[in-house]
Image (cartoon, rainbow, N blue to C red):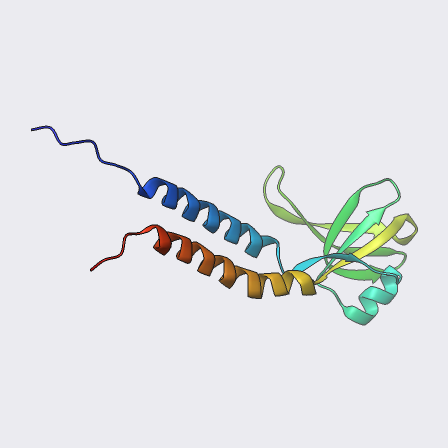
Length: 138
């Protein structure tokens, strides 16, 4: 006995839901903090704020992210995560006279508001769209 082909009205809803979940995940991953340049010297920043990570822009154009930075003699020293030839942390130092910019990761007010307000609104909109397309059950 052959069954009639199944209609697939759920595919558009499933695709919409999948896109919504992907957008939500992308928003969560990228929200709440960003690298922000500072107007102080590396010594002042590290001595005063004690950041866990700093991103140093060098004059040769390379950006170096250093974890647990400290000042040693005339350099910013700490560790850097590398993936080749295998994942590991290596000790690294950048001379102060080679540093062009200093950035730290700080909370981003706009992104935080977007995450706190936008995510629930997006979830409600997706749910409303899903329930609006379903026939009423009696």
